[in-house]
Each structure stands twice: as structure tokens, then as C-alpha cells.
Amino acid sequence: FRSAAAVHLAQELDKIAGDKMIIGDLNSYASEDAMLVLTEIPAGKEVQTARDTFIGNRPQFGGASQGIKLSQGYGYINAVKKADTIHERETSYSYIFDDYMGSLDHALVSKGMEDRIKDAIDWNINSIISAYYDYSSAFKNNPTRYHQTKTPYRSSDHDPVVVSLAYKYFEQDGNRRVQLPVISSRVELPFVY
Image (cartoon, rainbow, N blue to C red; front, side, top):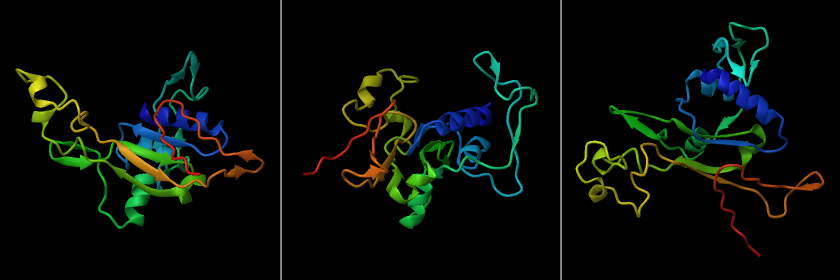
């Protein structure tokens, strides 16, 4: 179902003009099919979406009760992976489970934003901290004793992604000023005279 959801997300974002970013816990490692749908499907590989998926009461893929096969992704750029390459860093990770590391949390940008990426990294404030300090109260007699609520550390089991993009002050897109709408997250913009 995640690949079908990725198709729907990309199709809805295609309806919005301008730069776009998908950021957060996508619950998919970078090489899994759902991420490949959003980014790039390698040559010779096909991704099969789930069958019988619906958007509201309407079948997602019309009469295709078996889902659809995709051989091309929607072209979003993995900002963390790109920044790791630019800055010659080891591969970032945002999640550790049973001693396996990977990224489930991503910042994907539309192609037009690729040159705007100055840096993007997984901020390792949760995954590397012992579960002893976990935010969860499971298996603890006194959970407030261990979790430091005034710090960001171990506030989740995933690490957040931090992204730095470059826009010029008063930049224009044709005759329109560049707008940075925020739909469901926090964005901080510095103001310089």
C-alpha cells in the first residue's frame, strides 16, 4: 500500500506549482519501493503498487484491480543523500533497530530545488541514545526520572532531518515573489536588512 500512497502523494503535489518538499517519517528505507516511486526507479526495475486501493470511494487506479506497474519515479531528490555526497560524509541514518541502521525519515525536494540544497543531515539526537532514556514509559518504574523533558534528546525513536536551503532575498519566480507556505510543519526564516 505504501507504493500506491506514494503515487497518490506525488500526483497531488504535481498539482501545486513551484518548489516542493516532502519531509518527515516516511516509514520507508531509501531503497524500498515507496521511496523509489517518489525519487527514481533504477533501470530495469518495476514497482508494483497494491491492488484494490481507493481514494475515498473511488478506485485509485481506475479499472486496474491488480494495481499498476511503474518503471519511472517522480524525480524528487533525497536532500540528505545529496548533501552527504556534496560534503563527502558517511551515509546518514535516522533510525536504529536491533543494531541495524538506516533512514526512515527523509527530506525530498523537487528537481527545481536541487541546487538550493546547502546542507541536509539527520540530527542524531534520538537513535543513538540508549532506550534507558527513552520517552516511552514502557518497562520503567519511574519514567520521569530518566527522560529529560527539557532537552530534545530521546524525544522519539527517530532522528529529525535538518535542511538548509538557499533562496535569495526578494527572489522572484517570473513576475511573482517566491512564497514559502507552511502547511503542517515549522519553518524558520532569517530576516536580514
